Length: 588
Image (cartoon, rainbow, N blue to C red):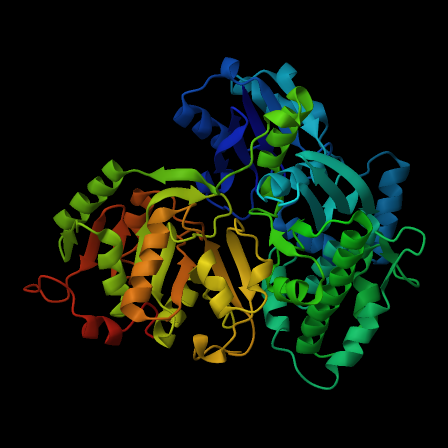
């Protein structure tokens, strides 16, 4: 039984489910010249997936589209124009006129969405459409194990099929919806509007806004928080629901209202108040839902909960037993969720297997890595080695101060790196962190670089680590038990981003972490996602070959091979002291 899940909205992708388990996921951004501007049907991704898997249209039993309805596709420029006109007389008159003459915003019909299938040899009559929030909840539930068999799935985002948030209870794999919040009360829409008002790009920079908000201080901060707390309230008749309070308009049309509401307030106070308001309000919502449904194990999904900087407050101030985040809380995860739900609806939930592990993307095979090593050796200026224990040798180089790119095995579906598509280095060297941060986000000075930890290490290093489920593979922001764990950070006492993996899920990364601890002690292992020239995660050794020298890396760990720069033509291996002192990309 093969199910093809398709997400044809913003950040489109396709997922393949075989024999009840997700086996591969491919993003359209991997093939686009402008990866952050694409929307619509993932044609290139579908073609690539079918070719790699050796499948034809006849081999696909069900095609599951994520979302009953799709909004009108918008480019980033169109989105910014919409926000700039929001609430103006011109925009209101234009909307009224278009509605009156039947020229309102055109949403793609199901027929429009099915048209690309025939051109790819797929069967439109085998398609089905899965509710947006149901698809998100399905992926979150499939990726989280509940000890007592009951799991609470909370979704909070901007909008999807007319909803901004939903509450589902998973019992033995069956999802039951118990509450919904309509999109005109959207906290995601509220956050996007604040992002726009502060001069940042909505639907892109919300995570940076939350990180920046963590540094806000001052006596006026509490006053701004109080002003924001007046805008939303919980429904006294429906305890799992919230609604807008007072005269606030629908959140996606509230630019002028919020501009006036926060007039004469400082940028950092608005950012910090927005973060703290969301932490407090959503923390109360989590507790209310857990109490009313009697579920102690909670998984969060949706774009708002995808802001992992909010996680420490949820873990510290909520009474749930375990609190995890979906491996892909953005809309792109709906492709896999739609495939899971389509199979469940057709054959029953007992046929749906857990997600298992998040490494479902492109694979870097040993033969490709060998070709990469031969190519770099022929170019010169490097030495190539294939040590007996590549993890131990890599750990020695990292402990000596090297900044390395690592490409190994499959790519993770959330595009977070997780050690297999990562920049690795010592986290206690400020120059290394600065170099990695510049390669990730050269336009953001406050961006924190994550560290890589095994799940078994969390309790020793972090507060509230016990709330991260044992299989909670993903990126979390956790508060350290000692501020000196990451010296030189902007806020040493604050939470830090942590990529969590387990030994059973990825033995190679686990062996690398253990070897690094042996050589460097309790030093944090920097683990930034390795991005290529277009700003997307490195997928293949060919992409790594195009990037690593230009980025100023010391070397690359490509599968079983180690490729290092040769500073001295007569040297047989790099000197640790030279690695620790040399300048990095950008002149640091």
